[in-house]
Length: 435
Image (tube, rainbow, N blue to C red):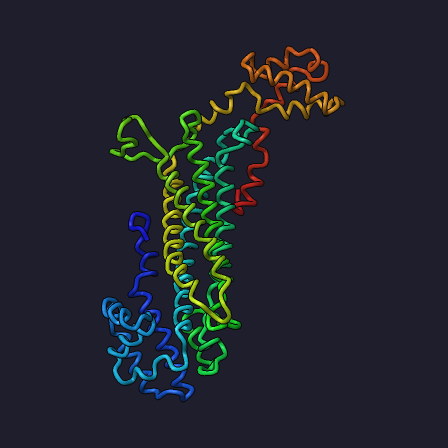
């Protein structure tokens, strides 16, 4: 985690103190279940809770023990024994390290998913507000980076809203996928720990029981989780790239908010650069980079190995923290985005009406002109307009072959901009449930 790209609430999930607190809760809930089953004394379970709950675990002390024993969970249990006293001999009965580590990791990933889902909600709130603000603001649609046909800026933002609505659905599914608990003991057979202990701990930690574990929770669950983060990050990059392109000097239809006192360049005082969107592209690349190692973690030896462990210690915090920051930053960019409708109009009209070429083509076909012939007639005039020899409507009006089929009024009707926006309300109802 890099402080520059870290927000406190997400970072707190991954602190040593949080991890140790979750470890303790898993152990203490397991002790409660064992006490109810008569496996350990009830007084011991009460003592474990009373002394552990009030303690602040000493990370430095745990690290000191770990340097000797070379095992993080053993180091924690040793420190917990120092806090709890003799009753600590009833902690971790029949359990293995993975019971604690895997259940803890899943608790952390669930909490991280909750924050990410809330982030998407905030982003979509900004997108919805701005989409309705520019619902009917005309702008040129581009395919292959080239002017195509008219659209509205509201529709551009509606596309992003729909995409992030899908992102939320995927995050909800990923959260459910990873929200499992395993307290099944060595190699997952429950030989040393009653399955009812697992069920009790799962309920207390807000998780589902893992159907079958092999000492570890299957890592296909985690691969799906991180793959989902990668897809969400790709959506962040798509929207950030759109903003970067719209801010280009030659286009300048929208631009990031530029604060008073902000500097765009150390050398050129005039610069207003899309630095936030560029930053989002870079952050998105990092989140996606964590997907491959998560996929590779699925393949482990027999009932367990720890080749996944070092990977998850890195990608768990880094992927969630980075995506959390990126989603929050993107929401801020959208919320304060400066939009230039007049530039959108200028760009829309820049090619002298070429964006209406398809309407003329279709109008000709309605007059019994073969499609290939209609295409030839329109393209012949469109290429002249492209070369700067006049606007398309004027050129078509002067074309005798075209005029044999279309009157002046019919040609002008083909250049009606509002024609393209007849179904904006329909699209908005589909996306937002209202128009």
